[in-house]
Image (cartoon, helix red, strand yellow):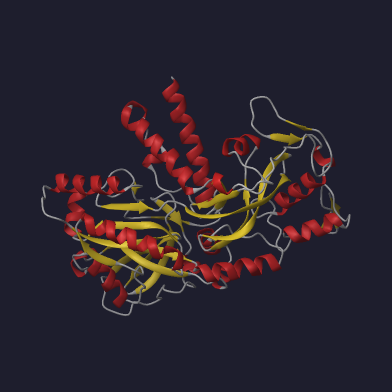
Length: 481
Protein backbone atom coordinates (compact mmCIF):
# COMPACT_ATOMS: atom_id res chain seq x y z
CA UNK A 1 0.00 0.00 0.00
CA UNK A 2 2.86 2.39 0.80
CA UNK A 3 4.56 1.68 -2.53
CA UNK A 4 1.29 2.14 -4.42
CA UNK A 5 0.68 5.46 -2.65
CA UNK A 6 4.21 6.65 -3.44
CA UNK A 7 3.79 5.74 -7.12
CA UNK A 8 0.53 7.71 -7.27
CA UNK A 9 2.17 10.71 -5.60
CA UNK A 10 5.11 10.64 -8.01
CA UNK A 11 2.80 10.40 -11.03
CA UNK A 12 0.72 13.35 -9.85
CA UNK A 13 3.82 15.47 -9.23
CA UNK A 14 5.38 14.60 -12.58
CA UNK A 15 2.17 15.30 -14.50
CA UNK A 16 1.89 18.70 -12.79
CA UNK A 17 5.51 19.49 -13.64
CA UNK A 18 4.92 18.36 -17.25
CA UNK A 19 1.99 20.76 -17.59
CA UNK A 20 4.05 23.64 -16.21
CA UNK A 21 7.03 22.86 -18.46
CA UNK A 22 5.39 21.88 -21.74
CA UNK A 23 2.04 23.70 -21.72
CA UNK A 24 2.74 26.84 -19.70
CA UNK A 25 6.47 27.29 -20.52
CA UNK A 26 6.99 28.01 -16.81
CA UNK A 27 8.89 25.18 -15.04
CA UNK A 28 8.24 24.90 -11.32
CA UNK A 29 11.30 22.79 -10.41
CA UNK A 30 14.86 22.38 -11.60
CA UNK A 31 15.63 19.70 -14.18
CA UNK A 32 17.65 17.76 -11.61
CA UNK A 33 14.64 17.57 -9.26
CA UNK A 34 12.37 16.40 -12.10
CA UNK A 35 14.93 13.84 -13.23
CA UNK A 36 15.19 12.48 -9.68
CA UNK A 37 11.42 12.05 -9.36
CA UNK A 38 11.22 10.44 -12.80
CA UNK A 39 14.05 8.00 -12.01
CA UNK A 40 12.44 7.02 -8.71
CA UNK A 41 9.15 6.27 -10.47
CA UNK A 42 10.95 4.24 -13.14
CA UNK A 43 12.70 2.17 -10.50
CA UNK A 44 9.50 1.51 -8.55
CA UNK A 45 7.63 0.45 -11.70
CA UNK A 46 10.50 -1.83 -12.70
CA UNK A 47 10.50 -3.51 -9.31
CA UNK A 48 6.70 -3.78 -9.09
CA UNK A 49 5.53 -4.24 -12.72
CA UNK A 50 1.89 -4.65 -11.64
CA UNK A 51 1.89 -0.94 -10.79
CA UNK A 52 2.93 0.08 -14.31
CA UNK A 53 0.07 1.58 -16.32
CA UNK A 54 -0.04 2.98 -19.90
CA UNK A 55 -0.82 6.50 -18.65
CA UNK A 56 2.24 6.70 -16.40
CA UNK A 57 4.58 9.64 -17.13
CA UNK A 58 7.33 7.06 -17.73
CA UNK A 59 5.35 5.74 -20.70
CA UNK A 60 4.48 9.10 -22.22
CA UNK A 61 6.31 12.04 -23.76
CA UNK A 62 5.75 15.69 -22.90
CA UNK A 63 2.19 16.84 -22.28
CA UNK A 64 -1.11 17.24 -24.10
CA UNK A 65 -1.25 19.97 -26.78
CA UNK A 66 -2.83 23.30 -25.89
CA UNK A 67 -6.47 23.88 -26.83
CA UNK A 68 -5.42 27.19 -28.37
CA UNK A 69 -3.92 25.47 -31.42
CA UNK A 70 -5.15 22.95 -33.94
CA UNK A 71 -3.73 19.46 -33.50
CA UNK A 72 -1.44 17.33 -35.64
CA UNK A 73 -1.18 13.55 -35.33
CA UNK A 74 2.42 12.43 -35.79
CA UNK A 75 2.56 9.56 -38.27
CA UNK A 76 5.85 8.55 -36.66
CA UNK A 77 5.75 9.18 -32.87
CA UNK A 78 8.07 11.87 -31.51
CA UNK A 79 9.77 10.08 -28.64
CA UNK A 80 11.95 11.39 -25.85
CA UNK A 81 15.41 10.14 -24.79
CA UNK A 82 16.58 8.03 -21.88
CA UNK A 83 18.96 9.88 -19.56
CA UNK A 84 22.42 9.10 -18.22
CA UNK A 85 23.86 10.93 -15.23
CA UNK A 86 27.24 9.21 -14.86
CA UNK A 87 29.95 7.52 -16.90
CA UNK A 88 28.76 4.19 -15.50
CA UNK A 89 25.35 4.81 -17.10
CA UNK A 90 27.03 5.39 -20.49
CA UNK A 91 29.13 2.22 -20.19
CA UNK A 92 25.96 0.27 -19.32
CA UNK A 93 24.24 1.76 -22.40
CA UNK A 94 27.09 0.54 -24.62
CA UNK A 95 27.00 -2.95 -23.05
CA UNK A 96 23.22 -3.22 -23.52
CA UNK A 97 23.50 -2.29 -27.19
CA UNK A 98 26.26 -4.83 -27.83
CA UNK A 99 24.26 -7.56 -26.09
CA UNK A 100 21.04 -6.61 -27.89
CA UNK A 101 22.65 -6.52 -31.34
CA UNK A 102 25.11 -9.39 -30.81
CA UNK A 103 28.14 -7.19 -31.49
CA UNK A 104 31.57 -7.29 -29.81
CA UNK A 105 33.50 -4.55 -31.67
CA UNK A 106 33.13 -0.86 -30.88
CA UNK A 107 30.19 1.00 -32.40
CA UNK A 108 30.43 4.20 -34.38
CA UNK A 109 28.28 6.88 -32.75
CA UNK A 110 26.97 10.28 -33.76
CA UNK A 111 27.46 12.72 -30.88
CA UNK A 112 25.83 16.16 -30.65
CA UNK A 113 25.23 18.77 -27.94
CA UNK A 114 21.79 18.39 -26.33
CA UNK A 115 20.28 21.68 -27.42
CA UNK A 116 17.92 23.11 -24.80
CA UNK A 117 14.94 24.39 -26.75
CA UNK A 118 11.56 23.23 -28.00
CA UNK A 119 11.25 20.14 -30.21
CA UNK A 120 9.41 20.71 -33.49
CA UNK A 121 8.68 18.78 -36.67
CA UNK A 122 8.37 20.05 -40.25
CA UNK A 123 6.51 18.18 -43.01
CA UNK A 124 7.57 18.75 -46.63
CA UNK A 125 5.67 17.53 -49.67
CA UNK A 126 7.31 17.85 -53.10
CA UNK A 127 9.96 19.99 -51.42
CA UNK A 128 7.56 22.58 -49.96
CA UNK A 129 6.78 23.13 -46.29
CA UNK A 130 3.13 22.18 -45.69
CA UNK A 131 2.95 21.69 -41.93
CA UNK A 132 4.85 22.36 -38.71
CA UNK A 133 4.04 21.11 -35.21
CA UNK A 134 5.29 20.77 -31.65
CA UNK A 135 6.02 17.39 -30.12
CA UNK A 136 3.06 17.63 -27.72
CA UNK A 137 2.56 14.26 -26.03
CA UNK A 138 4.59 12.47 -28.69
CA UNK A 139 1.53 11.30 -30.63
CA UNK A 140 -0.41 14.54 -31.01
CA UNK A 141 1.20 17.98 -31.29
CA UNK A 142 0.15 21.57 -31.84
CA UNK A 143 -0.18 22.92 -35.36
CA UNK A 144 2.15 25.94 -35.37
CA UNK A 145 2.88 26.04 -39.10
CA UNK A 146 2.50 29.82 -39.44
CA UNK A 147 4.87 30.42 -36.51
CA UNK A 148 7.53 28.02 -37.76
CA UNK A 149 7.57 29.71 -41.18
CA UNK A 150 9.04 32.78 -39.45
CA UNK A 151 11.92 30.92 -37.80
CA UNK A 152 15.49 31.09 -39.12
CA UNK A 153 16.67 27.70 -40.41
CA UNK A 154 13.20 26.62 -41.61
CA UNK A 155 13.29 26.64 -45.44
CA UNK A 156 9.97 27.22 -47.19
CA UNK A 157 11.34 25.24 -50.15
CA UNK A 158 14.03 22.54 -49.93
CA UNK A 159 17.20 23.45 -51.82
CA UNK A 160 18.00 19.97 -53.15
CA UNK A 161 16.41 16.70 -54.32
CA UNK A 162 14.43 15.01 -51.55
CA UNK A 163 11.75 12.32 -51.10
CA UNK A 164 8.20 13.27 -52.07
CA UNK A 165 7.30 13.31 -48.38
CA UNK A 166 9.97 14.24 -45.84
CA UNK A 167 9.42 15.05 -42.18
CA UNK A 168 12.36 16.86 -40.56
CA UNK A 169 12.68 17.11 -36.79
CA UNK A 170 14.77 19.41 -34.70
CA UNK A 171 15.04 21.98 -31.93
CA UNK A 172 13.96 25.62 -31.91
CA UNK A 173 16.40 27.72 -29.89
CA UNK A 174 17.00 31.26 -28.74
CA UNK A 175 20.69 32.15 -28.43
CA UNK A 176 21.90 33.37 -25.03
CA UNK A 177 22.67 36.89 -26.26
CA UNK A 178 19.24 37.20 -27.88
CA UNK A 179 17.61 35.91 -24.70
CA UNK A 180 19.27 38.59 -22.57
CA UNK A 181 18.24 41.28 -25.07
CA UNK A 182 14.63 40.01 -25.05
CA UNK A 183 14.48 40.08 -21.25
CA UNK A 184 15.84 43.63 -21.20
CA UNK A 185 13.07 44.65 -23.59
CA UNK A 186 10.45 42.80 -21.52
CA UNK A 187 11.65 44.52 -18.36
CA UNK A 188 11.54 47.93 -20.03
CA UNK A 189 7.90 47.32 -20.95
CA UNK A 190 7.08 46.05 -17.46
CA UNK A 191 6.29 42.58 -18.80
CA UNK A 192 7.11 39.12 -17.48
CA UNK A 193 10.75 38.02 -17.72
CA UNK A 194 11.59 34.59 -19.11
CA UNK A 195 13.46 32.20 -16.80
CA UNK A 196 15.94 30.95 -19.41
CA UNK A 197 16.50 30.68 -23.18
CA UNK A 198 14.47 27.47 -23.42
CA UNK A 199 11.38 29.09 -21.92
CA UNK A 200 11.86 32.17 -24.06
CA UNK A 201 12.00 29.99 -27.19
CA UNK A 202 8.95 27.95 -26.18
CA UNK A 203 6.93 31.00 -25.19
CA UNK A 204 7.85 32.77 -28.43
CA UNK A 205 7.05 29.80 -30.67
CA UNK A 206 3.72 28.91 -29.05
CA UNK A 207 2.09 32.28 -29.76
CA UNK A 208 -1.41 32.51 -31.24
CA UNK A 209 -0.22 35.56 -33.17
CA UNK A 210 2.56 34.57 -35.61
CA UNK A 211 3.69 38.22 -35.73
CA UNK A 212 4.92 37.90 -32.14
CA UNK A 213 6.94 34.81 -33.11
CA UNK A 214 8.35 36.64 -36.13
CA UNK A 215 9.59 39.44 -33.86
CA UNK A 216 11.62 37.01 -31.73
CA UNK A 217 15.11 35.77 -32.74
CA UNK A 218 14.57 31.99 -33.05
CA UNK A 219 16.62 29.36 -34.89
CA UNK A 220 15.75 25.79 -35.92
CA UNK A 221 18.46 23.10 -35.87
CA UNK A 222 17.58 19.82 -37.61
CA UNK A 223 18.65 16.60 -35.87
CA UNK A 224 16.52 13.83 -37.39
CA UNK A 225 13.65 12.69 -39.57
CA UNK A 226 10.19 11.24 -39.05
CA UNK A 227 8.00 10.08 -41.91
CA UNK A 228 9.76 9.68 -45.28
CA UNK A 229 8.20 8.32 -48.46
CA UNK A 230 11.45 6.85 -49.86
CA UNK A 231 13.91 5.85 -47.11
CA UNK A 232 16.47 4.80 -49.74
CA UNK A 233 17.09 8.48 -50.51
CA UNK A 234 18.26 9.12 -46.95
CA UNK A 235 21.94 8.39 -46.10
CA UNK A 236 22.49 5.19 -44.14
CA UNK A 237 24.41 6.88 -41.30
CA UNK A 238 23.16 9.33 -38.71
CA UNK A 239 26.08 11.70 -39.27
CA UNK A 240 25.64 11.45 -43.03
CA UNK A 241 21.94 12.22 -42.65
CA UNK A 242 22.77 15.43 -40.71
CA UNK A 243 25.12 16.52 -43.49
CA UNK A 244 22.47 15.67 -46.12
CA UNK A 245 19.90 17.81 -44.29
CA UNK A 246 22.42 20.63 -44.55
CA UNK A 247 22.36 20.34 -48.34
CA UNK A 248 18.56 20.76 -48.24
CA UNK A 249 18.79 24.11 -46.48
CA UNK A 250 18.67 23.10 -42.81
CA UNK A 251 21.11 23.93 -40.03
CA UNK A 252 22.53 20.69 -38.52
CA UNK A 253 23.27 20.67 -34.77
CA UNK A 254 26.45 22.67 -34.10
CA UNK A 255 29.32 20.59 -32.76
CA UNK A 256 28.12 17.28 -34.23
CA UNK A 257 30.84 14.63 -34.49
CA UNK A 258 31.16 10.99 -35.55
CA UNK A 259 33.16 9.07 -32.92
CA UNK A 260 34.26 5.46 -32.47
CA UNK A 261 33.62 3.59 -29.24
CA UNK A 262 32.32 4.46 -25.81
CA UNK A 263 35.63 5.98 -24.63
CA UNK A 264 35.40 8.54 -27.43
CA UNK A 265 31.84 9.35 -26.31
CA UNK A 266 33.06 10.18 -22.82
CA UNK A 267 35.90 12.31 -24.26
CA UNK A 268 33.31 14.20 -26.31
CA UNK A 269 31.16 14.72 -23.18
CA UNK A 270 34.10 16.08 -21.18
CA UNK A 271 35.29 18.41 -23.94
CA UNK A 272 31.81 19.78 -24.63
CA UNK A 273 31.33 20.33 -20.90
CA UNK A 274 34.60 22.25 -20.69
CA UNK A 275 33.43 24.79 -23.30
CA UNK A 276 29.73 24.77 -22.32
CA UNK A 277 29.76 28.18 -20.66
CA UNK A 278 31.32 29.80 -23.74
CA UNK A 279 28.81 28.38 -26.24
CA UNK A 280 26.35 30.92 -27.72
CA UNK A 281 23.42 28.53 -27.10
CA UNK A 282 22.19 26.69 -24.00
CA UNK A 283 22.79 22.94 -23.65
CA UNK A 284 22.02 20.61 -20.76
CA UNK A 285 23.99 17.57 -21.93
CA UNK A 286 25.07 15.69 -25.04
CA UNK A 287 23.22 13.11 -27.15
CA UNK A 288 24.69 9.81 -28.34
CA UNK A 289 23.13 7.81 -31.18
CA UNK A 290 24.26 4.74 -33.08
CA UNK A 291 25.60 6.09 -36.35
CA UNK A 292 24.39 3.13 -38.43
CA UNK A 293 20.69 3.75 -39.07
CA UNK A 294 20.09 0.09 -39.96
CA UNK A 295 21.39 -0.86 -36.49
CA UNK A 296 19.07 1.79 -35.07
CA UNK A 297 16.11 -0.04 -36.64
CA UNK A 298 17.29 -3.36 -35.22
CA UNK A 299 17.69 -1.90 -31.72
CA UNK A 300 14.15 -0.44 -31.81
CA UNK A 301 12.32 1.44 -29.07
CA UNK A 302 10.93 1.14 -25.57
CA UNK A 303 7.67 2.89 -24.68
CA UNK A 304 8.90 6.49 -24.80
CA UNK A 305 12.49 6.38 -26.04
CA UNK A 306 14.80 4.71 -28.58
CA UNK A 307 17.17 2.00 -27.36
CA UNK A 308 19.88 3.26 -29.72
CA UNK A 309 20.19 6.78 -28.26
CA UNK A 310 21.02 8.34 -24.90
CA UNK A 311 21.08 11.83 -23.39
CA UNK A 312 24.09 12.27 -21.08
CA UNK A 313 23.13 15.16 -18.80
CA UNK A 314 25.45 17.67 -17.17
CA UNK A 315 25.30 18.55 -13.51
CA UNK A 316 23.87 21.97 -12.74
CA UNK A 317 26.39 24.78 -13.20
CA UNK A 318 27.75 26.23 -9.96
CA UNK A 319 29.51 29.36 -8.77
CA UNK A 320 30.79 30.71 -5.44
CA UNK A 321 29.77 34.13 -4.11
CA UNK A 322 28.95 36.06 -0.91
CA UNK A 323 25.58 36.10 0.84
CA UNK A 324 25.12 39.80 1.60
CA UNK A 325 21.68 39.63 3.21
CA UNK A 326 18.40 37.72 3.46
CA UNK A 327 15.04 39.38 2.90
CA UNK A 328 11.53 37.93 3.12
CA UNK A 329 9.22 37.94 0.11
CA UNK A 330 5.44 37.74 0.54
CA UNK A 331 3.63 35.64 -2.06
CA UNK A 332 0.12 35.74 -3.51
CA UNK A 333 -1.23 33.34 -0.87
CA UNK A 334 0.68 34.99 2.00
CA UNK A 335 3.59 32.53 2.07
CA UNK A 336 6.75 34.13 3.47
CA UNK A 337 9.78 33.05 1.46
CA UNK A 338 13.33 33.95 2.49
CA UNK A 339 15.43 35.13 -0.46
CA UNK A 340 19.21 35.44 -0.45
CA UNK A 341 20.70 38.72 -1.63
CA UNK A 342 23.96 37.72 -3.30
CA UNK A 343 27.04 39.45 -4.57
CA UNK A 344 26.24 39.28 -8.32
CA UNK A 345 27.87 36.26 -9.99
CA UNK A 346 27.54 34.72 -13.48
CA UNK A 347 26.07 31.21 -13.42
CA UNK A 348 25.14 29.38 -16.61
CA UNK A 349 25.39 32.49 -18.74
CA UNK A 350 23.12 34.62 -16.49
CA UNK A 351 24.15 37.02 -13.70
CA UNK A 352 22.52 35.84 -10.47
CA UNK A 353 21.82 38.34 -7.68
CA UNK A 354 19.05 36.58 -5.72
CA UNK A 355 18.35 32.95 -4.85
CA UNK A 356 15.43 31.39 -3.05
CA UNK A 357 16.04 29.81 0.35
CA UNK A 358 12.54 28.24 0.43
CA UNK A 359 11.86 28.27 4.21
CA UNK A 360 13.39 28.43 7.68
CA UNK A 361 14.07 24.67 7.72
CA UNK A 362 16.14 24.95 4.53
CA UNK A 363 18.21 27.75 6.07
CA UNK A 364 18.82 25.59 9.14
CA UNK A 365 19.67 22.54 7.01
CA UNK A 366 22.27 24.48 5.04
CA UNK A 367 23.62 26.15 8.18
CA UNK A 368 23.67 29.51 6.44
CA UNK A 369 24.64 32.80 8.08
CA UNK A 370 24.59 36.25 6.53
CA UNK A 371 28.11 37.01 5.31
CA UNK A 372 28.88 33.40 4.37
CA UNK A 373 30.55 32.35 1.15
CA UNK A 374 27.94 30.18 -0.56
CA UNK A 375 27.71 27.81 -3.52
CA UNK A 376 25.03 28.80 -6.05
CA UNK A 377 23.65 26.66 -8.86
CA UNK A 378 21.04 27.04 -11.56
CA UNK A 379 19.85 23.45 -11.75
CA UNK A 380 18.44 22.86 -15.19
CA UNK A 381 19.31 26.52 -15.86
CA UNK A 382 16.01 27.59 -14.28
CA UNK A 383 15.81 28.72 -10.64
CA UNK A 384 18.96 29.88 -8.81
CA UNK A 385 19.43 28.13 -5.48
CA UNK A 386 22.06 27.85 -2.75
CA UNK A 387 23.35 24.29 -2.35
CA UNK A 388 25.92 24.80 0.40
CA UNK A 389 28.42 27.02 2.13
CA UNK A 390 32.22 27.21 2.27
CA UNK A 391 32.72 26.94 6.09
CA UNK A 392 36.41 27.87 6.08
CA UNK A 393 35.58 31.24 4.52
CA UNK A 394 33.01 32.25 7.16
CA UNK A 395 33.87 35.77 8.42
CA UNK A 396 34.01 36.60 12.10
CA UNK A 397 31.14 39.08 11.77
CA UNK A 398 28.71 36.63 10.10
CA UNK A 399 25.29 36.57 11.75
CA UNK A 400 22.34 34.16 11.82
CA UNK A 401 19.06 35.01 10.11
CA UNK A 402 16.05 35.27 12.41
CA UNK A 403 12.80 34.41 10.65
CA UNK A 404 10.17 37.08 11.45
CA UNK A 405 7.00 36.35 13.41
CA UNK A 406 5.16 39.14 11.59
CA UNK A 407 4.66 39.95 7.91
CA UNK A 408 7.29 42.45 6.71
CA UNK A 409 4.72 44.06 4.39
CA UNK A 410 1.76 44.63 6.69
CA UNK A 411 2.81 43.66 10.22
CA UNK A 412 0.17 40.90 10.57
CA UNK A 413 1.05 37.76 12.50
CA UNK A 414 2.92 35.10 10.52
CA UNK A 415 1.81 31.59 11.43
CA UNK A 416 3.02 28.14 10.51
CA UNK A 417 0.04 25.95 9.57
CA UNK A 418 0.05 22.44 11.09
CA UNK A 419 1.99 19.94 9.00
CA UNK A 420 3.64 22.61 6.80
CA UNK A 421 7.18 23.99 6.73
CA UNK A 422 6.22 27.49 5.60
CA UNK A 423 5.03 30.55 7.48
CA UNK A 424 2.08 32.48 6.15
CA UNK A 425 0.92 36.09 6.60
CA UNK A 426 -2.57 36.18 8.14
CA UNK A 427 -3.37 39.62 6.77
CA UNK A 428 -5.09 38.47 3.56
CA UNK A 429 -6.10 41.37 1.34
CA UNK A 430 -5.17 44.00 3.92
CA UNK A 431 -1.57 43.01 3.10
CA UNK A 432 -0.23 45.24 0.28
CA UNK A 433 2.22 42.57 -0.87
CA UNK A 434 -0.58 40.01 -1.30
CA UNK A 435 -2.70 42.62 -3.09
CA UNK A 436 0.06 43.26 -5.63
CA UNK A 437 0.87 39.57 -6.12
CA UNK A 438 -2.80 38.73 -6.69
CA UNK A 439 -3.15 41.55 -9.18
CA UNK A 440 -0.04 40.34 -11.01
CA UNK A 441 -1.52 36.84 -11.17
CA UNK A 442 -4.88 38.21 -12.33
CA UNK A 443 -3.28 40.09 -15.23
CA UNK A 444 -0.84 37.30 -16.19
CA UNK A 445 -0.92 35.21 -19.35
CA UNK A 446 -2.26 32.21 -17.44
CA UNK A 447 -5.23 34.22 -16.11
CA UNK A 448 -6.78 37.26 -17.86
CA UNK A 449 -3.73 37.81 -20.12
CA UNK A 450 -3.94 41.62 -20.05
CA UNK A 451 -1.43 42.85 -22.61
CA UNK A 452 0.87 45.65 -21.47
CA UNK A 453 -0.10 45.37 -17.80
CA UNK A 454 3.19 44.05 -16.48
CA UNK A 455 4.63 43.85 -12.99
CA UNK A 456 6.07 47.37 -12.96
CA UNK A 457 2.80 48.95 -14.11
CA UNK A 458 0.79 47.07 -11.49
CA UNK A 459 3.22 48.05 -8.74
CA UNK A 460 3.00 51.69 -9.89
CA UNK A 461 -0.82 51.66 -9.98
CA UNK A 462 -0.91 50.13 -6.50
CA UNK A 463 1.71 52.50 -5.11
CA UNK A 464 -0.25 55.51 -6.39
CA UNK A 465 -3.43 54.22 -4.78
CA UNK A 466 -5.22 53.77 -8.11
CA UNK A 467 -5.96 50.07 -7.66
CA UNK A 468 -6.19 47.81 -4.63
CA UNK A 469 -7.84 44.38 -4.67
CA UNK A 470 -9.54 44.57 -8.06
CA UNK A 471 -9.85 46.48 -11.32
CA UNK A 472 -12.67 48.65 -12.59
CA UNK A 473 -13.02 47.92 -16.28
CA UNK A 474 -15.34 49.39 -18.90
CA UNK A 475 -16.93 46.89 -21.28
CA UNK A 476 -19.58 47.97 -23.78
CA UNK A 477 -20.30 51.18 -21.90
CA UNK A 478 -20.83 49.45 -18.53
CA UNK A 479 -18.44 49.42 -15.62
CA UNK A 480 -17.65 46.17 -13.85
CA UNK A 481 -15.55 45.43 -10.80
